[in-house]
Amino acid sequence: MRKLITAVIVLGVLAGVLAGAGMVISRSRGAGGEGAATTVLLHDVAGEQLVERVNAPGTIEPQTHVSISARVSARVAQLPFQEGDRVAAGDVLVRLDAADLEAALASADAHRAAQEAQIAVQAAEIAVQQAQIEGVRAALEEARRDLERQRNLRTSGDTSQSLVEQAQRRTDELDAQLRAAEHTLRAAELRRAVLQHNLRAAEADIARARDALSYTTIASPIAGVVTRLNAKEGELVVTGTMNNPGTVIMEVADLSRMLLVAEVDEADIGAVAAGQEAQVRLQAYGDETFAGSVESIALAEEYSRDGTRHYPVKILLDASERRIYCGLTGEAEILTRRHEGVLTVPSQAVLARRTDELPPDVRRDNPRVDPEKVYTSVVYRFAEGKAVVVPVDVGPSSLTRTVIEAGLDGGDRVVVGPYKVLETLRHDQRLADENAPPASQSASAPAP
Image 1: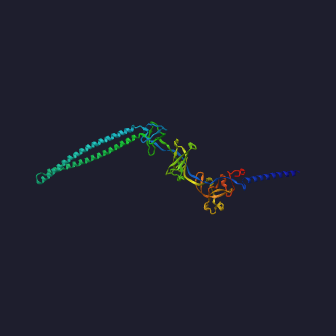
Image 2: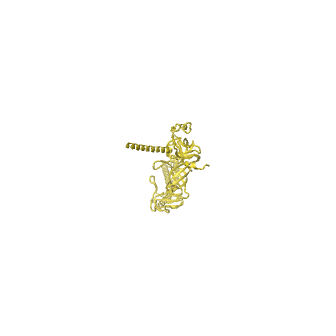
Image 3: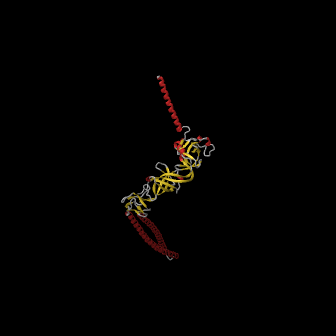
């Protein structure tokens, strides 16, 4: 009797286990087994506009800004404007102490006057030398005539040889005096030329001193706002050298026209051109978008802090009288190219499948399948409740959409998600539209 009861219990337990296993198997088949449709998200293919975009980070700076530096070393005597003040072109921004430069100008003036006086003295000396030369030349002519007479008298025997020799010595002495006077005159004229060169040098010193004196008053070259003030009254400002920069006293910028200097990657710079539209978002203004246009593109590359190479692109913003501060960081979205009336799909719908794993009837004689390539670009078209793998030729793409140049037609429906389903999706797999109405609702809907 006890054995019979034990056998009944064992049979009951086995029956329960088998029943449970049957329920699990039944549920698993109903959920995803053979014959069950996979729920997917579909997208209708239609002609639309696609805009290619290039994204790049950047920093705000004024289109026009100047750094005011000293061209002479002096102490700051006056700063009429403070940081944040608005200035007009020509307004005096800085006055420097001009005492030393005024003294230098006075010294240069005195030096020029001394040179002019020396030139006048030299001119008088030249006049004396010229007069002496004339006197010596006249005496020489007289001595030569006397020598000629003495020679004639000596020939006729009316004079002695000593008188002839005396006349000859007199002539030679006057001739030497004439040559010496002429050399002295040429030296005096050369000294006058030197003095004239010195006079021009003195005049150049005066011009330099006046120019340096003019640098003690610095005017604004543009209309704008004082964005930075680096000096105070009484401080010494110095000029720059090859190895050391000069003192930047202040910076003035025109804040009515602002630029975002975007760092465009070298892989994208080829698509960017002057005049293209851009949209700029600044971190300081949240989701607000500023319109802009590409003003210029640098011809030489620069390097970021992380060592990556980029090209600076200046984007002029339309701030609509909004005050935008210098140095803000933001993101630029440059609209590089528009495509009108093209067939597009969400980019996640375009997949890469191994060419040798495509169905034979899909690979055979298909112009969009290259047997030499390992992978083929495909999408999965929804047809009669199944997934149909379709090789496609893809074109340009934006951040979210890709142009389909061949392989699909308008009105086709393609699978765009979920992503986990796309990873394992296969040809002829049964599908169900995620957005389709439940069967009970469709059955209860009134007939048209």
